[in-house]
Length: 446
Image (cartoon, rainbow, N blue to C red; front, side):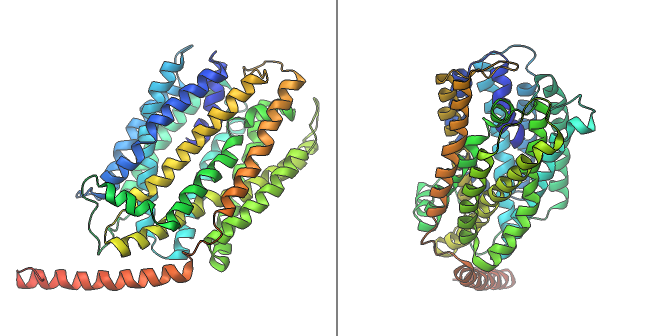
Protein backbone atom coordinates (compact mmCIF):
# COMPACT_ATOMS: atom_id res chain seq x y z
CA UNK A 1 0.00 0.00 0.00
CA UNK A 2 2.81 2.40 0.84
CA UNK A 3 4.45 1.74 -2.52
CA UNK A 4 1.26 2.21 -4.53
CA UNK A 5 0.11 5.34 -2.73
CA UNK A 6 3.50 6.96 -2.34
CA UNK A 7 4.90 6.41 -5.83
CA UNK A 8 2.13 5.58 -8.28
CA UNK A 9 -1.17 7.10 -7.10
CA UNK A 10 -0.23 10.78 -7.70
CA UNK A 11 0.96 9.97 -11.22
CA UNK A 12 -2.20 7.92 -11.84
CA UNK A 13 -4.49 10.86 -11.01
CA UNK A 14 -2.38 13.31 -13.00
CA UNK A 15 -2.82 10.92 -15.91
CA UNK A 16 -6.61 10.97 -15.44
CA UNK A 17 -6.57 14.64 -16.47
CA UNK A 18 -5.96 16.35 -13.14
CA UNK A 19 -3.01 18.75 -13.25
CA UNK A 20 -0.02 18.71 -10.92
CA UNK A 21 -1.39 21.64 -8.93
CA UNK A 22 -4.81 19.99 -8.51
CA UNK A 23 -3.37 16.67 -7.34
CA UNK A 24 -0.92 18.42 -4.98
CA UNK A 25 -3.77 20.50 -3.52
CA UNK A 26 -5.92 17.40 -3.00
CA UNK A 27 -3.14 15.48 -1.26
CA UNK A 28 -2.30 18.49 0.90
CA UNK A 29 -5.95 18.92 1.93
CA UNK A 30 -6.23 15.25 2.87
CA UNK A 31 -3.03 15.24 4.87
CA UNK A 32 -3.96 18.47 6.68
CA UNK A 33 -7.11 16.77 7.93
CA UNK A 34 -5.48 13.38 8.41
CA UNK A 35 -2.51 14.45 10.55
CA UNK A 36 -4.84 15.26 13.45
CA UNK A 37 -6.21 11.73 13.49
CA UNK A 38 -3.19 9.81 14.76
CA UNK A 39 -2.85 11.53 18.18
CA UNK A 40 -6.56 10.93 18.85
CA UNK A 41 -6.15 7.30 17.81
CA UNK A 42 -3.13 7.07 20.09
CA UNK A 43 -5.11 8.31 23.09
CA UNK A 44 -7.95 5.92 22.24
CA UNK A 45 -5.65 2.90 21.84
CA UNK A 46 -3.87 3.55 25.13
CA UNK A 47 -7.18 3.45 27.02
CA UNK A 48 -8.61 0.48 25.08
CA UNK A 49 -9.23 -2.63 27.19
CA UNK A 50 -11.13 -5.49 25.53
CA UNK A 51 -11.25 -9.28 25.92
CA UNK A 52 -9.21 -9.58 22.70
CA UNK A 53 -6.57 -7.04 23.69
CA UNK A 54 -5.69 -3.40 23.19
CA UNK A 55 -4.45 -3.29 19.59
CA UNK A 56 -6.24 -6.21 17.93
CA UNK A 57 -9.67 -4.45 17.75
CA UNK A 58 -8.13 -1.43 15.99
CA UNK A 59 -6.34 -3.67 13.51
CA UNK A 60 -9.58 -5.48 12.68
CA UNK A 61 -11.54 -2.21 12.41
CA UNK A 62 -8.98 -0.53 10.16
CA UNK A 63 -8.85 -3.30 7.55
CA UNK A 64 -12.30 -2.91 5.89
CA UNK A 65 -12.02 0.90 5.96
CA UNK A 66 -8.65 0.82 4.21
CA UNK A 67 -9.89 -1.77 1.73
CA UNK A 68 -12.92 0.30 0.74
CA UNK A 69 -10.89 3.45 0.18
CA UNK A 70 -8.16 1.61 -1.71
CA UNK A 71 -10.63 0.03 -4.11
CA UNK A 72 -12.42 3.31 -4.82
CA UNK A 73 -9.11 5.11 -5.46
CA UNK A 74 -7.58 2.50 -7.74
CA UNK A 75 -10.79 1.67 -9.64
CA UNK A 76 -12.40 5.11 -10.05
CA UNK A 77 -14.67 4.10 -12.94
CA UNK A 78 -13.62 6.81 -15.37
CA UNK A 79 -12.33 10.37 -15.24
CA UNK A 80 -12.79 11.85 -11.76
CA UNK A 81 -11.91 15.15 -10.14
CA UNK A 82 -10.04 16.19 -7.04
CA UNK A 83 -13.16 16.00 -4.85
CA UNK A 84 -13.35 12.27 -5.48
CA UNK A 85 -9.63 11.92 -4.74
CA UNK A 86 -9.94 13.85 -1.47
CA UNK A 87 -12.94 11.84 -0.23
CA UNK A 88 -11.50 8.39 -0.79
CA UNK A 89 -8.00 9.30 0.33
CA UNK A 90 -9.50 10.40 3.64
CA UNK A 91 -11.25 7.05 3.99
CA UNK A 92 -8.15 5.09 3.02
CA UNK A 93 -5.80 6.98 5.31
CA UNK A 94 -8.20 6.65 8.25
CA UNK A 95 -8.07 2.87 7.90
CA UNK A 96 -4.33 2.88 7.23
CA UNK A 97 -3.72 4.97 10.36
CA UNK A 98 -5.49 2.37 12.49
CA UNK A 99 -3.45 -0.41 10.88
CA UNK A 100 -0.05 1.27 11.03
CA UNK A 101 -0.36 2.70 14.53
CA UNK A 102 -1.68 -0.50 16.08
CA UNK A 103 1.11 -2.58 14.51
CA UNK A 104 3.84 -0.12 15.55
CA UNK A 105 2.63 0.12 19.16
CA UNK A 106 1.96 -3.62 19.37
CA UNK A 107 5.54 -4.32 18.29
CA UNK A 108 6.89 -2.04 21.02
CA UNK A 109 5.17 -3.97 23.82
CA UNK A 110 6.19 -7.33 22.37
CA UNK A 111 9.89 -6.42 22.23
CA UNK A 112 11.19 -4.75 25.39
CA UNK A 113 14.96 -5.08 24.97
CA UNK A 114 17.05 -2.31 23.31
CA UNK A 115 18.59 -4.64 20.72
CA UNK A 116 15.55 -6.89 20.39
CA UNK A 117 13.56 -3.91 19.09
CA UNK A 118 16.02 -3.31 16.28
CA UNK A 119 15.59 -6.95 15.30
CA UNK A 120 11.78 -6.92 15.43
CA UNK A 121 11.37 -3.70 13.46
CA UNK A 122 13.99 -4.96 11.02
CA UNK A 123 12.00 -8.15 10.45
CA UNK A 124 8.75 -6.28 9.87
CA UNK A 125 10.48 -4.00 7.40
CA UNK A 126 11.92 -7.03 5.66
CA UNK A 127 8.43 -8.41 5.13
CA UNK A 128 7.31 -5.01 3.84
CA UNK A 129 10.13 -5.20 1.30
CA UNK A 130 8.94 -8.63 0.15
CA UNK A 131 5.41 -7.28 -0.29
CA UNK A 132 6.59 -4.32 -2.36
CA UNK A 133 8.87 -6.46 -4.49
CA UNK A 134 6.00 -8.84 -5.21
CA UNK A 135 4.04 -5.96 -6.76
CA UNK A 136 7.04 -4.74 -8.72
CA UNK A 137 7.56 -8.25 -10.13
CA UNK A 138 4.00 -8.36 -11.51
CA UNK A 139 5.24 -7.86 -15.11
CA UNK A 140 7.26 -11.07 -14.71
CA UNK A 141 4.44 -13.01 -13.04
CA UNK A 142 1.80 -11.89 -15.57
CA UNK A 143 3.89 -11.87 -18.77
CA UNK A 144 3.71 -8.06 -18.90
CA UNK A 145 -0.08 -7.81 -18.56
CA UNK A 146 0.05 -6.08 -15.16
CA UNK A 147 2.64 -3.34 -14.58
CA UNK A 148 2.75 -0.80 -11.78
CA UNK A 149 2.70 2.67 -13.29
CA UNK A 150 0.23 1.85 -16.05
CA UNK A 151 -3.33 3.06 -15.57
CA UNK A 152 -4.81 -0.09 -17.08
CA UNK A 153 -3.13 -2.20 -14.39
CA UNK A 154 -4.60 -0.38 -11.40
CA UNK A 155 -7.75 -2.58 -11.10
CA UNK A 156 -5.54 -5.69 -10.93
CA UNK A 157 -3.40 -4.06 -8.23
CA UNK A 158 -6.58 -3.21 -6.30
CA UNK A 159 -7.73 -6.83 -6.52
CA UNK A 160 -4.40 -8.05 -5.14
CA UNK A 161 -4.61 -5.66 -2.18
CA UNK A 162 -8.23 -6.67 -1.54
CA UNK A 163 -7.06 -10.26 -1.02
CA UNK A 164 -3.72 -9.61 0.69
CA UNK A 165 -4.86 -7.09 3.32
CA UNK A 166 -7.52 -9.21 5.07
CA UNK A 167 -5.26 -12.27 4.98
CA UNK A 168 -2.47 -10.29 6.68
CA UNK A 169 -4.80 -8.88 9.34
CA UNK A 170 -6.29 -12.31 10.08
CA UNK A 171 -2.82 -13.86 10.43
CA UNK A 172 -1.67 -11.09 12.77
CA UNK A 173 -4.86 -11.14 14.85
CA UNK A 174 -4.95 -14.92 15.30
CA UNK A 175 -1.29 -15.77 15.85
CA UNK A 176 0.27 -12.74 17.58
CA UNK A 177 0.21 -12.61 21.39
CA UNK A 178 -0.36 -9.33 23.15
CA UNK A 179 1.32 -8.27 26.37
CA UNK A 180 0.03 -5.23 28.22
CA UNK A 181 2.85 -3.30 29.88
CA UNK A 182 2.54 -3.58 33.61
CA UNK A 183 3.18 -1.09 36.35
CA UNK A 184 1.60 1.88 34.65
CA UNK A 185 -1.80 3.48 34.53
CA UNK A 186 -3.73 3.68 31.30
CA UNK A 187 -3.89 6.93 29.45
CA UNK A 188 -7.43 7.63 30.58
CA UNK A 189 -9.30 10.28 28.65
CA UNK A 190 -7.94 12.88 26.32
CA UNK A 191 -5.29 14.52 28.47
CA UNK A 192 -3.18 17.32 27.02
CA UNK A 193 -0.84 17.08 30.02
CA UNK A 194 0.18 13.61 28.87
CA UNK A 195 0.87 14.90 25.38
CA UNK A 196 2.89 17.85 26.68
CA UNK A 197 4.89 15.67 29.07
CA UNK A 198 5.73 13.30 26.24
CA UNK A 199 6.73 15.86 23.61
CA UNK A 200 8.77 17.86 26.13
CA UNK A 201 11.21 14.97 26.48
CA UNK A 202 14.43 16.01 24.69
CA UNK A 203 14.96 12.50 23.35
CA UNK A 204 11.50 12.43 21.77
CA UNK A 205 11.81 15.93 20.35
CA UNK A 206 14.99 14.90 18.53
CA UNK A 207 13.35 11.75 17.21
CA UNK A 208 10.24 13.54 15.95
CA UNK A 209 12.25 16.29 14.25
CA UNK A 210 14.64 13.77 12.70
CA UNK A 211 11.76 11.58 11.53
CA UNK A 212 10.24 14.56 9.74
CA UNK A 213 13.34 15.50 7.78
CA UNK A 214 14.34 11.89 7.13
CA UNK A 215 10.85 11.35 5.68
CA UNK A 216 11.16 14.52 3.62
CA UNK A 217 14.54 13.48 2.21
CA UNK A 218 13.90 10.16 0.45
CA UNK A 219 10.19 11.05 0.33
CA UNK A 220 10.95 13.92 -2.05
CA UNK A 221 12.03 11.38 -4.66
CA UNK A 222 8.93 9.15 -4.35
CA UNK A 223 6.37 11.19 -6.37
CA UNK A 224 9.12 12.03 -8.90
CA UNK A 225 10.55 8.55 -9.23
CA UNK A 226 8.67 7.33 -12.31
CA UNK A 227 9.02 10.69 -14.08
CA UNK A 228 12.75 10.92 -13.35
CA UNK A 229 13.85 7.48 -14.45
CA UNK A 230 11.52 7.44 -17.45
CA UNK A 231 12.13 10.93 -18.89
CA UNK A 232 15.51 11.95 -17.44
CA UNK A 233 17.26 8.57 -17.44
CA UNK A 234 15.58 6.99 -20.47
CA UNK A 235 14.12 3.79 -18.99
CA UNK A 236 10.75 2.36 -20.03
CA UNK A 237 7.85 2.20 -17.58
CA UNK A 238 8.31 -1.55 -16.97
CA UNK A 239 12.06 -1.02 -16.51
CA UNK A 240 11.38 1.76 -14.00
CA UNK A 241 9.42 -0.69 -11.86
CA UNK A 242 12.21 -3.24 -12.30
CA UNK A 243 14.79 -0.75 -11.00
CA UNK A 244 12.66 -0.03 -7.96
CA UNK A 245 12.91 -3.71 -7.04
CA UNK A 246 16.61 -3.24 -6.35
CA UNK A 247 16.05 -0.06 -4.33
CA UNK A 248 13.43 -1.70 -2.12
CA UNK A 249 15.08 -5.11 -2.16
CA UNK A 250 18.26 -3.67 -0.68
CA UNK A 251 16.22 -3.24 2.49
CA UNK A 252 16.27 -7.02 2.94
CA UNK A 253 20.04 -6.77 3.30
CA UNK A 254 19.99 -3.40 5.04
CA UNK A 255 17.59 -4.32 7.86
CA UNK A 256 19.66 -7.10 9.50
CA UNK A 257 22.93 -5.27 8.82
CA UNK A 258 21.58 -2.13 10.52
CA UNK A 259 20.52 -4.25 13.48
CA UNK A 260 24.04 -5.60 13.90
CA UNK A 261 25.62 -2.15 13.59
CA UNK A 262 23.14 -0.75 16.10
CA UNK A 263 24.17 -3.45 18.57
CA UNK A 264 27.74 -2.21 18.45
CA UNK A 265 27.38 1.55 17.99
CA UNK A 266 23.84 2.33 19.12
CA UNK A 267 20.78 3.20 17.08
CA UNK A 268 21.37 6.94 16.79
CA UNK A 269 24.98 6.52 15.61
CA UNK A 270 23.81 3.96 13.06
CA UNK A 271 21.27 6.48 11.72
CA UNK A 272 24.01 9.11 11.39
CA UNK A 273 26.27 6.73 9.46
CA UNK A 274 23.37 5.87 7.16
CA UNK A 275 22.70 9.58 6.52
CA UNK A 276 26.27 10.21 5.34
CA UNK A 277 26.26 7.08 3.19
CA UNK A 278 22.91 8.11 1.68
CA UNK A 279 24.35 11.43 0.54
CA UNK A 280 27.28 9.68 -1.14
CA UNK A 281 25.23 7.01 -2.90
CA UNK A 282 22.49 9.44 -4.02
CA UNK A 283 25.14 11.70 -5.57
CA UNK A 284 26.68 8.75 -7.44
CA UNK A 285 23.25 7.66 -8.70
CA UNK A 286 22.52 11.15 -10.00
CA UNK A 287 25.85 11.30 -11.84
CA UNK A 288 25.23 8.11 -13.84
CA UNK A 289 24.64 8.74 -17.56
CA UNK A 290 21.31 8.42 -19.33
CA UNK A 291 20.52 5.24 -21.26
CA UNK A 292 19.29 5.55 -24.84
CA UNK A 293 16.66 3.71 -26.92
CA UNK A 294 17.81 0.24 -27.84
CA UNK A 295 20.04 -0.09 -24.78
CA UNK A 296 20.95 -3.57 -23.62
CA UNK A 297 20.57 -5.12 -20.14
CA UNK A 298 24.23 -4.42 -19.34
CA UNK A 299 23.63 -0.68 -19.69
CA UNK A 300 21.31 -0.78 -16.68
CA UNK A 301 23.86 -2.43 -14.34
CA UNK A 302 25.39 0.86 -13.04
CA UNK A 303 21.92 2.22 -12.27
CA UNK A 304 20.95 -1.04 -10.58
CA UNK A 305 24.03 -0.83 -8.34
CA UNK A 306 23.28 2.81 -7.57
CA UNK A 307 19.67 2.02 -6.65
CA UNK A 308 20.80 -0.76 -4.33
CA UNK A 309 23.25 1.57 -2.62
CA UNK A 310 20.67 4.29 -2.00
CA UNK A 311 18.04 1.76 -0.91
CA UNK A 312 20.45 0.07 1.48
CA UNK A 313 21.16 3.40 3.22
CA UNK A 314 17.55 4.64 3.28
CA UNK A 315 16.32 1.38 4.83
CA UNK A 316 17.90 2.40 8.14
CA UNK A 317 15.71 5.43 8.79
CA UNK A 318 12.23 4.01 9.36
CA UNK A 319 13.14 0.89 11.33
CA UNK A 320 15.66 2.55 13.67
CA UNK A 321 13.48 5.60 14.34
CA UNK A 322 10.57 3.34 15.31
CA UNK A 323 12.82 1.26 17.55
CA UNK A 324 14.07 4.45 19.24
CA UNK A 325 10.50 5.60 19.92
CA UNK A 326 9.90 2.31 21.72
CA UNK A 327 12.85 3.14 24.00
CA UNK A 328 11.34 6.57 24.77
CA UNK A 329 8.06 4.83 25.66
CA UNK A 330 9.89 3.08 28.50
CA UNK A 331 11.51 6.33 29.62
CA UNK A 332 8.14 8.09 29.76
CA UNK A 333 6.47 5.17 31.56
CA UNK A 334 9.19 5.14 34.24
CA UNK A 335 8.99 8.88 34.88
CA UNK A 336 5.23 9.42 34.58
CA UNK A 337 3.80 6.04 35.54
CA UNK A 338 1.58 6.16 32.45
CA UNK A 339 1.64 3.81 29.50
CA UNK A 340 1.50 6.13 26.46
CA UNK A 341 2.79 3.67 23.86
CA UNK A 342 0.24 4.41 21.13
CA UNK A 343 0.30 8.16 21.74
CA UNK A 344 4.07 8.37 21.35
CA UNK A 345 4.03 6.31 18.17
CA UNK A 346 1.25 8.51 16.82
CA UNK A 347 3.66 11.46 16.94
CA UNK A 348 6.11 9.86 14.51
CA UNK A 349 3.38 8.49 12.25
CA UNK A 350 2.03 12.04 12.13
CA UNK A 351 5.43 13.50 11.19
CA UNK A 352 5.69 10.89 8.44
CA UNK A 353 2.36 12.07 7.05
CA UNK A 354 3.43 15.70 7.26
CA UNK A 355 6.64 14.86 5.45
CA UNK A 356 4.89 13.12 2.58
CA UNK A 357 2.47 15.98 2.01
CA UNK A 358 5.21 18.63 2.12
CA UNK A 359 7.10 16.84 -0.64
CA UNK A 360 4.08 16.87 -2.93
CA UNK A 361 3.18 20.48 -2.07
CA UNK A 362 6.69 21.65 -2.93
CA UNK A 363 7.65 19.39 -5.82
CA UNK A 364 4.51 19.27 -7.95
CA UNK A 365 4.08 23.07 -8.24
CA UNK A 366 7.76 23.34 -9.22
CA UNK A 367 7.24 20.78 -11.99
CA UNK A 368 4.22 22.75 -13.14
CA UNK A 369 6.29 25.96 -13.06
CA UNK A 370 9.06 24.56 -15.27
CA UNK A 371 6.48 23.30 -17.77
CA UNK A 372 6.82 19.58 -17.13
CA UNK A 373 3.90 17.51 -18.49
CA UNK A 374 3.18 14.43 -16.38
CA UNK A 375 0.57 12.78 -18.60
CA UNK A 376 1.36 9.29 -19.85
CA UNK A 377 3.05 9.48 -23.26
CA UNK A 378 3.73 13.25 -23.10
CA UNK A 379 6.90 14.69 -24.68
CA UNK A 380 8.77 17.23 -22.53
CA UNK A 381 11.32 19.90 -23.37
CA UNK A 382 14.94 19.79 -22.22
CA UNK A 383 14.22 22.68 -19.86
CA UNK A 384 11.33 20.81 -18.23
CA UNK A 385 13.43 17.67 -17.78
CA UNK A 386 16.28 19.73 -16.29
CA UNK A 387 13.82 21.14 -13.74
CA UNK A 388 12.76 17.58 -12.93
CA UNK A 389 16.40 16.57 -12.37
CA UNK A 390 17.06 19.49 -10.05
CA UNK A 391 14.03 18.60 -7.93
CA UNK A 392 15.30 15.04 -7.63
CA UNK A 393 18.88 16.01 -6.74
CA UNK A 394 19.29 18.63 -4.05
CA UNK A 395 16.53 18.34 -1.45
CA UNK A 396 17.00 14.67 -0.43
CA UNK A 397 20.70 14.96 0.44
CA UNK A 398 20.37 18.24 2.36
CA UNK A 399 17.40 17.03 4.39
CA UNK A 400 18.98 13.68 5.26
CA UNK A 401 22.13 15.44 6.51
CA UNK A 402 19.97 17.65 8.74
CA UNK A 403 18.28 14.53 10.12
CA UNK A 404 21.61 12.95 11.01
CA UNK A 405 22.87 16.13 12.66
CA UNK A 406 19.86 16.18 15.01
CA UNK A 407 21.22 13.13 16.83
CA UNK A 408 24.38 14.80 18.03
CA UNK A 409 23.96 14.92 21.80
CA UNK A 410 21.32 12.16 21.91
CA UNK A 411 21.72 10.28 25.22
CA UNK A 412 19.15 7.45 25.28
CA UNK A 413 21.63 4.72 24.35
CA UNK A 414 21.75 1.01 25.22
CA UNK A 415 23.31 1.58 28.66
CA UNK A 416 20.74 4.15 29.74
CA UNK A 417 17.85 2.10 28.37
CA UNK A 418 19.08 -0.97 30.25
CA UNK A 419 18.93 1.01 33.51
CA UNK A 420 15.40 2.19 32.65
CA UNK A 421 14.24 -1.36 31.93
CA UNK A 422 15.75 -2.64 35.20
CA UNK A 423 13.86 0.03 37.13
CA UNK A 424 10.62 -0.73 35.27
CA UNK A 425 10.94 -4.47 35.82
CA UNK A 426 11.55 -3.95 39.53
CA UNK A 427 8.54 -1.64 39.87
CA UNK A 428 6.32 -3.98 37.84
CA UNK A 429 7.33 -6.92 40.04
CA UNK A 430 6.48 -4.96 43.19
CA UNK A 431 3.10 -3.93 41.81
CA UNK A 432 2.35 -7.50 40.74
CA UNK A 433 3.19 -8.73 44.22
CA UNK A 434 0.93 -6.09 45.77
CA UNK A 435 -1.89 -7.07 43.42
CA UNK A 436 -1.45 -10.71 44.43
CA UNK A 437 -1.62 -9.83 48.14
CA UNK A 438 -4.73 -7.77 47.53
CA UNK A 439 -6.52 -10.67 45.85
CA UNK A 440 -5.58 -13.02 48.74
CA UNK A 441 -6.53 -10.68 51.57
CA UNK A 442 -9.63 -9.29 49.86
CA UNK A 443 -8.65 -5.74 50.85
CA UNK A 444 -6.68 -3.01 49.10
CA UNK A 445 -3.04 -2.52 50.02
CA UNK A 446 -2.05 1.08 50.82
